Length: 210
Image (cartoon, rainbow, N blue to C red; front, side, top):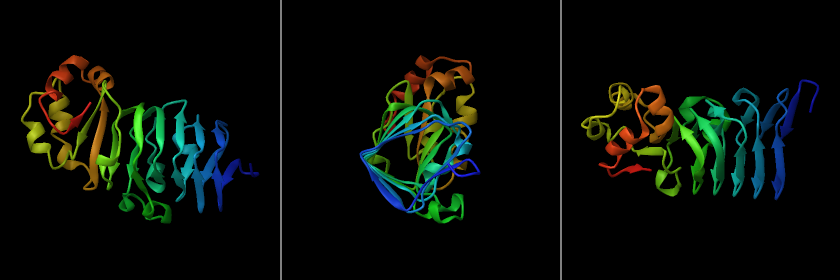
């Protein structure tokens, strides 16, 4: 850690190591020019203390030990063959260089990754092919190509105000949005309904993974 409380991992390759990023007083910077292969990263810091600056993660495992909220730094990372565990909300993954005009965000990507042991809500895949990814199972559900399929989804009677707020707003999602994952449990709580009410609608559609 430097005198400013920053922990830097840059300009090197790291293989087969376990990194625990858990100091709540530190700012962690991974990259630039960092490649990690077959590593396990244990994350227990808030989003504002975790930065990926064009780092490459290959066949790595991310263990999120406290909910990671609104973490857009995934968009500055190249993620290939990685596995995610734990709770994340409002996070974006993939390629969305327009999000921020910084070098790392030009390099963001995601492919062949596994979210089946993660719990996601309000998380998006941007500018990358969702067909290469494994999404979390029920009670999470994933809308594939939500912008293109918005008219079809609007034709259903969704529970509570979910339809009038979330589904009606799908066309306002950023153009690179390729998938949107939500938690039926959390959305049901927010909209004062039940997960089963969501499932009864979801089961009618192809193109929703659950």
